[in-house]
Image (cartoon, rainbow, N blue to C red):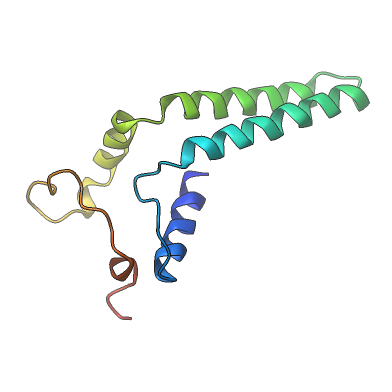
Length: 109
């Protein structure tokens, strides 16, 4: 979900539209996913006699809930550390400079 959200922001920026590089809307997206999961689980309980399918959806929902609960700056800091080999040497910009639309295009453009 995170990679698709970021890819959507890249395409928005490439079209000159405002991009959510701070991931402010990601929590709402996970809440939407939780709503869909609840409805799928409800429908499955109506048509399936076993618990395996419903349990799978419940596990997915628990995962979506844990992600939306932990979406904060600390989580982003933890993820950022994984990408350290891709950064230029030196400290990051103060406050994390937001990416501009022209920065979203590759250098070959």
